[in-house]
Image 1 (cartoon, rainbow, N blue to C red):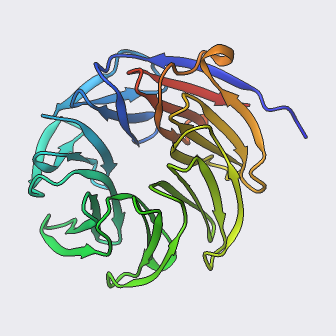
Image 2: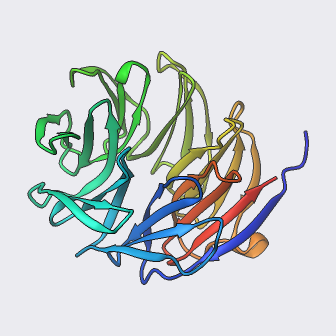
Length: 294
């Protein structure tokens, strides 16, 4: 087995509080947001202090960029705000009655917005009108993963993954983790999940369990798959990022403060950019670290 080499390319600083949300942009761009309410645009090709493209009143936990170049920003007091990233103008606002917003996903011509109290708000992306409310649990909706045929896997704070079809009908529900499911990602027809119980689980296309490992000491907040599908990265409350073989869930590298100059506090979010295959991690320490996996 070849040795995996890790290089920390840079650290982006500028946020005034913990960073909770990351989103890929076009080419080398990406976006971050967190407790300070700043939505910041960064460029992996030209490291700098970043550019604040919006200032939101309150914490931001969810960002999603649509095909029109509009960044959907989940704001826990006023709902969804749409920011045109080209000129930083606010182009729409969708009130959600003070509900927390933990995740946003685009499914066909609709946007699914995950809240506390087990509620999913479905919005028509063209008209920005609310077309459906889905409630299948009393516990928070934490993450989405769009599957084949516009099915959607949804992770909840009760430890369940629930599968909905394109008609918003619940087609399957199963207990995946002991408590909150924080991240879901697909690779082909297979699904990966992580949660508060610090486990990584690998699911077959029929949602039977293929493999599981205890991944970290504390809760795993996020999981991302490399652009070539070979590696998985996980981010944890234990302050580390870990790199795994996607196929067998074999641990290949631990990125921490002492050995790699990693984060000093909980790691909350990851993106794996197709630009030079760079991995970005965001933390409670207010910083973003940029990693090259060789």
